[in-house]
Image (cartoon, rainbow, N blue to C red; front, side):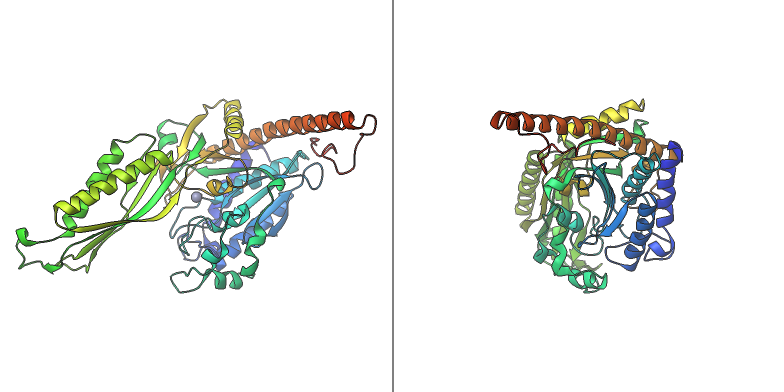
Length: 453
Ligand SMILES: [Zn+2]
């Protein structure tokens, strides 16, 4: 397999997983957490992982993990991966591409007979999108050791099935979900490759981007309450209509975010007028607000400003308003050292290494609680995602694997240098404590675990 074919194989496999038995719905891609389509996708990934030279297991949180051993057994691992679940009627590359590029990377190492000073594990997380249960990233949280099982296992999907019941149906014991947690000493870093899901790389004619940080976000619910009334008989000057007030609030959100810095963005994605009839002035209007920025301070300042505006607008119109925080996620900076390595690997391909933040959330932000993280973005057509029209090119996928291989090489050099430095300093300090009695203490880190293969 030439290097060019490596990336195209990943893309072809994403296309295959976008159809037939790997989707819950005929003619589109819907693959939600713990469904039979999810199980079939994991079975197929397991075959490909094994073919690429990995030993394969499912962990207690429904993550599929393929491990390619280091030059020595029991070495810590570089984790590479992304999510296998999709939104309803989603695209083929959001998530799976990061897994399949990882498999192609390992296959390239395997075919070349190369072993690294660390193991490489490719991970397929089960639940990033939150498209079945009202929680997201529970699989990466379990692996990172930050999952609160009591908060998650009782959640129900739209059919009333609890997450615990879905786990059992999937052949897993929900009581053991926390056993998926990895020890810090087992993991040296996490690398996630993902489609950009935005238009920046395409606009700048770039195949790849290096992610600096994943944006901080807050989700809020705003409710404005007035008085319901008859649409035909209530004169305009006697109404307490929350509808136009909500429209003013949306304009305020737009104005505040347009004037903001640090890639501040604000979105009203859902709006409900109650009771919701043609001929009734609504008694209440409820809408969502999603506010993100590169850092929490900018995001929080915007949330504060828009909340003040909402209360002022409601007061002026004689209405009541409430703003409720539903979810807050801090920004997750990628590791500066790893980001520099990834940048250099992209540069080695003769490409400009464009740095950019991620406005979308990713498993990498959860994995940052466990280990240093790096993220590579791949250009996608029109910046479109969460949509069947999602599209990437084979050439860009090939470049992505080559950049990832370059990154892995640089990380291996660094790892070997650090391991030999730390074993030398251990030897030196042991020499000082007990001159002459230090050579190769069994089980010490001076054992050649860092030797590249
Ligand atoms: Zn994704």
